Image (spheres, rainbow, N blue to C red):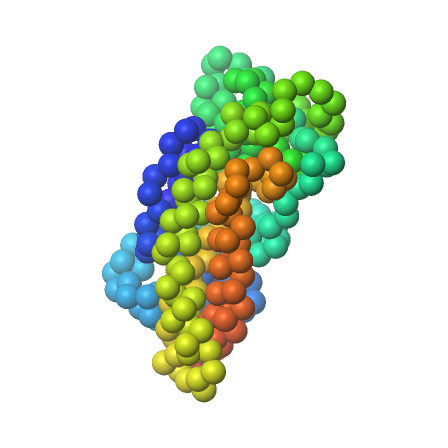
Length: 293
């Protein structure tokens, strides 16, 4: 599921993400806690908890392998998969951005980016633009991009890992005068489109929070843990791209009733409610498979 917020387009958020996106979330959440790899049988079992049949899971696994996202490995002498080594650092950095998004203050510096790519390498130019959007940059002019300064280290590492640093120049800067930053921010980022994505997230998950709060005091059970796992994996998959599209702009520069603040609170409440139950269920399925092997 990709987003074109930076390109002035925003597809509607699907309540249930695609199978391969759920599998990526599955690896990000649980594979690293269990030796870095998962047996195929465990992946199929956990995806079945979300209503995905084995054939659909195997097909999605095959596509992820072809794209270089996961690699075939042996797990306790059984067929399994692990995240590609080149992506491990990306997932580690993603943990902070997804679970602890940071919002800049009006006093913070800005990170500026510009790049030069030969006409003969248009594919590189498109890749850089797409990557800048993914990392939360706004477009000042066709040749100048901007993001809050707190993203500096993450951004530099991101482009270095992808071999794109040679085309880019980055600068740290202060805003010392000119137009009202509130006005500028509204032109550099497509705030209505981003706000709509947050609104969709709230609409899709507000009822989920109400339902789980009613069950919060119920005794733990395998069935409840399995439901929590299914809800949590979908929740994470819906949420994890939003903190990238939203760079954490100062709240003073954003419209009133900015939906990101309510969405972040909703996500954190659901994370607290569901993650322990989901972890318990996932560990049970993964460890049971290891014991059988």
